[in-house]
Amino acid sequence: MHVEKWDKCLSFIKEHIPEQSFNTWFTPVIPIRLEGQILTIQVPSQFFYEWLEENYVHILHEAVNLVIGPNGKIEYSVIMDNGSEANQPYTVNVGGNSGGFNKTRVNGYDKYKNPHFMQELARDSNLNPNYQFDNYIEGDCNRLARSAGFAVSKKPGITSFNPFMVYGGVGLGKTHLIQAIGNEIKRKHPEKYVFYVSSEKFTNQFIDALKSNSLQEFIAYYRNVDVLMLDDVQFLKDKEKTQEIFFHIFNHLHQSGKQIIMTSDRSPKDLSGLQERLVSRFKWGLTADIQKPDFETRIAIIKKKLQADGILITDQIIEYLAYSVNTNIRELEGVIISMIAHASLTNVEVDLELAKTILKNIVADIDSEVSIDYIQKTVGEFFNISIDDLKAKTRKKEIVIARQVAMHFAKDYTNHSLKSIGYHFGGRDHSTVIYALQSVSDMIDANSKFKYSIEELRKKLKLKNS
Ligand code: ADP
Ligand code: MG
Image (cartoon, rainbow, N blue to C red; front, side, top):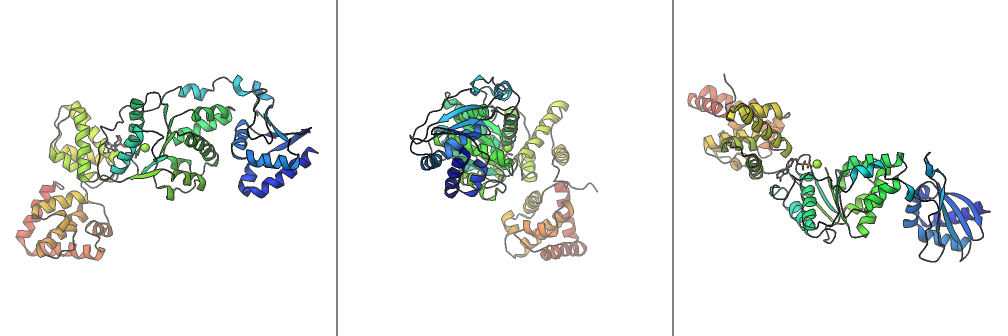
């Protein structure tokens, strides 16, 4: 009898919700009994029950109304499915068609002791106090993200930047920025509970919670946060269950006006392996990207870091670094830190040679000594021609020569392919580069003054001791 009734409910529900959702949320449900007008159904977990309650309560009411009648009610029996003392199923009653509904805990999880992950979390924000706005250098590369982040820190949950999503490549300052937001919020709104977590840790906590049957506490914990920062959401790729739970938490927080901040290494539209509905949530607020820092910003970052450590390094070296490490701020920092370590351990002043050696040892993908940028700068200065001109379409003779010389050094001293070299000189074709190399070698043979210039430049670049 109860099975029949439930089947009828199911066919009604099935017609009204997407098949995927139906399979996920309704096929695991087992009808247990029908007592009077109360149909008891068994669900696999507390989370499951909550999910149904939050998302499908109306459709359930309608179904019950139709199948059992206006006084029909559904009662849940939730399975606690591991060998703990709370092992017996307990029930939660949910009213039928009354709109609001009562939940009665018969044998609740209240008895549950704090699971270990909660003790571990305590009310710690997980923030690194070194990540602040005032040591986060602003540049064209991060201006929007930074200022939006600052706005969020003033009014968490209230601006339209909710969720606030920052994306950009590795080592470009995403974590620093969102933690700066977190630190700022704690300062301005000490009553708010700010919580930072990496997506990896979130996933592990979730798995732990599943294993220790404390999913409920896990969810309750996250629902209690005022500002949730989830770092590197791309990590959730293909982790269906974790995405599911995050979606659940996300909705709850968002509806309660809590701030959500996330980072990702790519833009939401490129986040494959994430459920569409989750990605579409990400787009609700503001998405801001962080780009690679330009030269001036790199200089400013280096100076800031050195200043923080009270180390004096010449502008020449700072420029050299800024030219050579042009991809990633983390690498740039690595170089600075080693230099500082060197300087303080050996009491030796950091000169350009030392800087180059350190650079070579640290930055794995710069296995040549200098970058194309640095070559362009040095060659440009030598011939008194701007870098822009080196990259421009101009065919003025002296510019063409300087450009060809720079290409020649780029070929000799970097590992860039001809194609890539061409690309760095205003998007020229690789055959243009071949032609340049040939011209330079011809001129060296034919013109001793030119040959001398090349040797001077070589020394300037201090690239070869031969
Ligand atoms: P991501 O999370 O994007 O991989 P991080 O936030 O970990 O990058 O940044 C890498 C390092 O670079 C950090 O030590 C950070 O302090 C530093 N950094 C990044 N951007 C800036 C910036 N704009 N100003 C100062 N330091 C920065
Ligand atoms: Mg990061």
